[in-house]
Image (tube, rainbow, N blue to C red):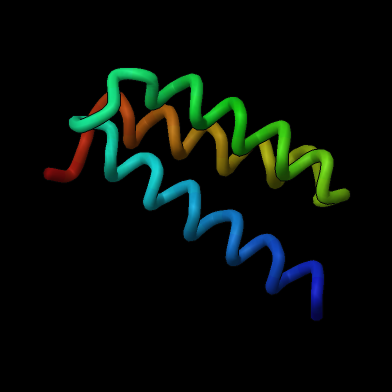
Length: 64
């Protein structure tokens, strides 16, 4: 349960950082920092990578 909650919070933070892509030119760098934090938190590497790739997508194609 805690791991799912931690992953959800990480995903929400990643989405927020990706939404700031237009304001911050270092969006992809922030995605990678979030990815490393996800792995450091002990989450599944494949899930962390998937979230990172979604973040990269959001940087490339911002919703705003």
